[in-house]
Picture 1 (cartoon, helix red, strand yellow):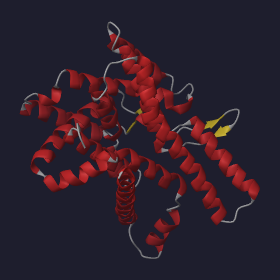
Picture 2 (picture 1 turned 45 degrees about the vertical axis):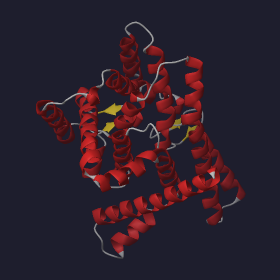
Picture 3 (picture 1 turned 120 degrees about the vertical axis):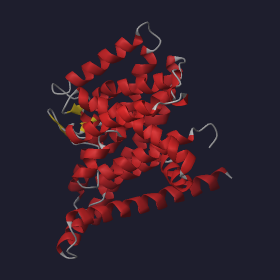
Picture 4 (picture 1 turned 180 degrees about the horizontal axis):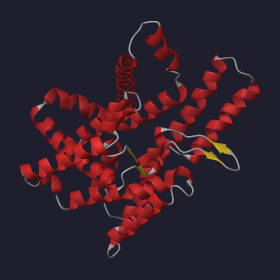
Length: 331
């Protein structure tokens, strides 16, 4: 836990829980969390970005981001093959399942599917890893140039505008668009934004803009560069993330038990993301949800809340177990 900044770990904890809730909870939850959860991760990544040799930087990010992406995809492919075997599907069907998910892994799209020369379905939440890789490379290259912020703005704009024309593999355009958030994080560290005294007027202004974006803005889907109300949603992503960071400073200082829980998820956010993607792509919850609604007579929202609680408990147990195994191996 050396050299960790606790309030940023707490922020990552909130963000990963928001991602899980956004994929599980009712519409009002989605409208809230989709304003900030993914931007928070890009901003934090930019906060820790350090200038250095480009080749060394690329190698480091390949190891940190694309290696877990490959392992996560392998787990999804294998999980779906095993699922097919459980349902006693034929060899041809199993081969088709393997091909489908291998193509999905190579395409690396969060929600957009490809149906041109071949069909590639979405890979799900793992899209974030290659997108972050490309966003970090763009910012790393640009900050060394005079007026580097212009490179980032242009790159972000091109990524956004080309989305409706075509969608490149490995969520490259999502990374291009999100580079603006990585740059914001980089500048926040450079200008020591989180170390400065903050006026109530600044907090109130940021919170007010965020609330407006929640109620009047569209859902901000960085996964496919969708912001239904343009700059309003982008502004909501920035101000919402800022309010989350300020909230995390308060939690760190005044809410110890909550800080411990959120830090646990924050420090293990990458593992949680991989588990969550495996869950979404492999596990079939539809029959359980239907059973809860029809047999147990639980409301749809009630079933979703129960599902969310079950997911968090299961993920926590898996993460804690994985941490214990890793600790044992280090000994």
